[in-house]
Amino acid sequence: MANGRLEAQYTVPTGGWVITPTITAIGGPFTCTIAAGTYFPTALLAALQVALDAASGGDGAFTVSAGTGESGTGLVTIAHATQTFTAVWTSPDLRDALGFTADLTPAALTFTGTKHMRGVWLPTHPINAPRGSDPGHTETDRSELVAPDGTVSSLVYGTAQRVRMTGVEWAVVTARRALVTQEVTVGESFEQWWLDTHSGLRTYFSTSPQVRLHWNADAGTYHTFYLTGRTTTELQRAGDGNWIGIWQVAISGYKVSGS
Picture 1 (cartoon, one colour):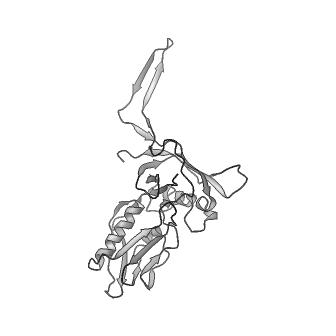
Picture 2 (cartoon, rainbow, N blue to C red):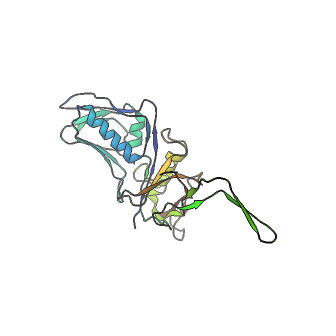
């Protein structure tokens, strides 16, 4: 079974996010802007690559990637195929979101962040979803009145229906991907993911961001939800509860209409 992946949606503010690279053999600095709007992490990386490729006359030689597969590290890599380069993070939030802590210097072909990409959570063990990759069951605004003789009358207050995520959990998650205090790579834990994306800690995540649940982190199948029911980072220990090395993570919510 696959482990899956969670991705929360960024909100890039008015004016966009800017990085200014200088390519050693070509020149610069070039102004590269990711336009204001909403992006899921994979789309943000693609938008950054497009901006970098266009900046130096459209040489198309940059790659921007992240280890977000089933065995991924969560680290972002920015590389140029043939030319060394440097870059200044004109927008510190972009640097922070991608897991970098300083400008890209001295000149090199490749730079890799040292922190986990914010907005992405990578569990360590298989997802437990009772309905498989089905997004959930349907709820309606139906109410019922039962008369003394057993006659049932009902009202439905609208035609809209909502889909409730059904019992999605990871019964086993290693401590480093569960608890902030056990992280090996900064930002890799579910606790930090939730704090970043749902607690108001980061201005580039709304307090109710859309979240994509990828049923398999190596494949493209996902559904988009609003998560509900959690107000703390409290988690339960897995197994018999006598060892702090493994934990349980569960999520709940509603499918985004039309997604």
